[in-house]
Amino acid sequence: MYDQNPVFIPGPTNIPQRLLGAMQIQTRDHRAPDFKDTFLPVLEDTKRVFGTTTGQVITFPASGTGGWEAAVSNTLSPGDTVLVARYGMFSHRWIDLCQRHGLDVQIIECPWGAGAPVEVFEAALKADINHKIKAVLVTHNETATGVKSDIAAVRGAIDAASHPALLFVDCVSSLASMPFEMDTWGVDIAVSGSQKGFMLATGLAILCVSPKALTAMETAKLPRTFFDFKDMMGANANGGFPYTPPLQLIYGLREALKMLFDEGLENVYARHHRLAEGVRRAAEAWGMKLCAASPDLYSDTVSAIYVPEGFDSNALTEHAYSAYGVSFGIGLGEMNGKAFRIGHLGALTDTMVLSGLATIEMAMADLDYPITLGSGVAAAQEYYRKSKGAAMSVAA
Ligand SMILES: *Cc1c(COP(=O)(O)O)cnc(C)c1O
Figure 1 (cartoon, rainbow, N blue to C red):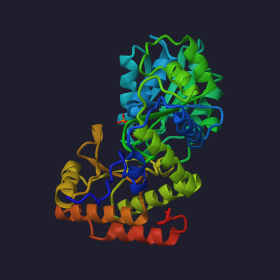
Figure 2 (cartoon, protein in one colour):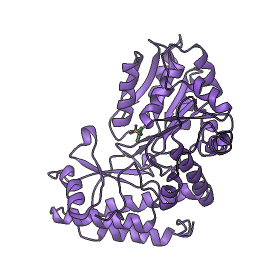
Figure 3 (cartoon, rainbow, N blue to C red):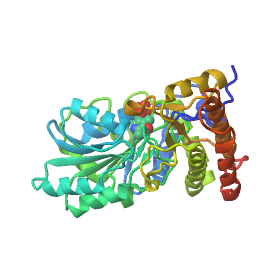
């Protein structure tokens, strides 16, 4: 079996050869005096991707879910109220995690395809005159629906209510692919992971924590041991780790940051926007609708696309995999069977995305979808030809 076909799932993403190489290192002693010379600059450089100078980067050996757990358990106490909107599978799972930690979760139900409900948040915060709500939790990029929320507007709602709540943001599927401005947006904890925009193997939760969240940590009572910020920051300050660090991922992250900075973060974001726009034009040419309710919500890292009535999106993704060896994202939760997802984040070029569009068209044609072979590819080609300029350099 060849492994040259890219995956079009929205994470884990394709790992470029350069990063596979960077992660392929022999064991080194993390207690050696020079480990800190490798590790500390990585933490420092990661701040640039979060858009912060005042935040503190903290990593744990975990997937993104571990990052959520770290955020919640380090800053909140049993019975604390948090405000969250549910508009997809990832916001749903974050709610579930809070409930299992004994928090009082004030849930705002939204249709899947909507973004964070800024006005409803503002009203809820204004009504909370005793400031029982300790944190507002927002999923920046809802990977299930392909919806990007406006984090600056959520901060605006908190400020308009003059409310002291912390703002926690899940940016697992947006960081290092779409603009993120932790300081400007007033984010208190941002949670990400190694296997999406950073193009690495899964296994490193990457967080950034504001001074305000660190103050909240001092009085927060939820239990934490493995995910203790204090233990981690204390060890990190001397260039160490409270337990065994995932060395290969740290070396990988160092190289991933070099790749992102070599290309230029602005160019990385522009490339993701172009790739996404080509996919959206393809969906339009097929006569298919995105789950995202309006263009301002369109995600530049993943598109969730409804299949026509009477077709089963699971049969489509299964056929693309079994007949052509290419993976696409399935519809999650209530979209299962009704939509498939094209992940377009990480190490991807125009050429790679066109191959994905061509493949899913073949799978659709095999299953008698009412589409014209080549129509989506042509729409994306037209767009890529006309918008090229910031395309990923082959040499980089
Ligand atoms: C991938 C993802 C996560 C984390 O999932 P893990 O499998 O634990 O890494 C969280 N939120 C969003 C929006 C994601 O896309």
